[in-house]
Amino acid sequence: MVEIIGTIGSGPLRFFLTFHDGVEIADEYPVRIGGTGRLGDGTEIARVMHEFGDGPDGLRIRLTIQFPANAPEHVFVGRQWHFACEFTNWLEGAHAQA
Image 1 (cartoon, rainbow, N blue to C red):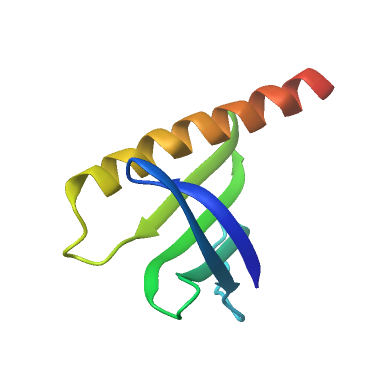
Image 2 (cartoon, rainbow, N blue to C red):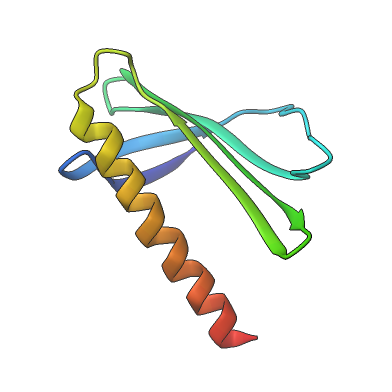
């Protein structure tokens, strides 16, 4: 389990991610990280599956997060922007080290 303070919706949120064991590996995404996010009181707030693999033009990444159906729209849109910023920063940092 890891503690995460991340942007969910319009602001930061503290939650805990428990990784799933035995995640089935797909040929096109041989590296998979899946888990369930819960608040400190145990309330489930999200499920995630991040997948990584090699593609014809380099790295392929598929980021998936599931929120409860009744979550407000800004939660979904905010997380999309967060992923875009976070993974762009990681990739730029990795490229600078290459």
